[in-house]
Amino acid sequence: MTAGVAAIVGLIDVVGGPTLGRDVGYGMLGPLVAALGTWIVIERTAATDLSRLNQRLILGFAVKAVFFAAYVTLGLRVARGPNPVHRGLHDVFHRAAHDRGLAAATAHRPPHGVF
Image (tube, rainbow, N blue to C red; front, side):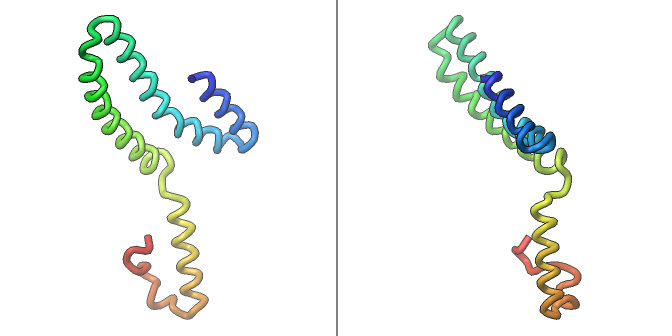
C-alpha cells in the first residue's frame, strides 16, 4: 500500500507539478498512517489475545476520529495558510459589486453567509 501511494504521488508530481504532488502526498499521508496503525494493532492483538480485537478496534476508531480532526485542521489552517478558494470568491464578489455600483455598500464586508 505504501508503494502504491508513493507511485501515485510520483505520477501526480510528474504530471501536475511538484506543488500538486506535495499536496496530494500530504492528503494521502493521514489515511495511510491510520491504515498502517490499524494493521499493526490487528496483527499484535491477534498474536496475543484475539478476544480483545473488537474492543481495540472500537477504541482505535475513536482515536482515528480525533487524529483526522487534528490532521484536517492542520492541513487547512496551518500548512496552506489562507484558503485560496475563499480569497478567489471574495475577489469575485467585490468585483461584481463594484461593477454594479455597490462598492460603497459592500466595501467593508460581504453579506452574511457568503463566506
